[in-house]
Length: 108
Image 1 (cartoon, rainbow, N blue to C red):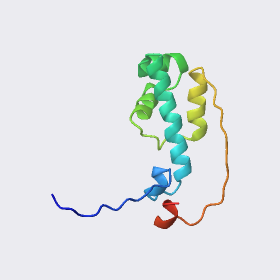
Image 2 (cartoon, helix red, strand yellow):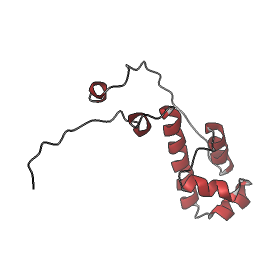
Image 3 (spheres, helix red, strand yellow):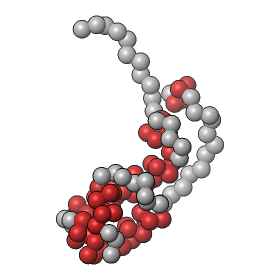
């Protein structure tokens, strides 16, 4: 085994930003909401068809959420799905000015 030095690079806290996506904050929030929907389905032991019957949302949409295929979903739609599953969203917003992203800023 070689004794090469491993460079440690700290992420920004948002994997979508680290990967250079165009709308990283929106994508991260979509992922968080989708994860909550999946948790709700699992807790209630709902199949995608049962979730469709309960909410009127297409079973294919629940399959897309389970597969993290979120491109077709808006934040509003994901919140609406959570509401139809019987829960409410509480959001806390913190706005801060960001420096242009760089490897040096990621380590701070």
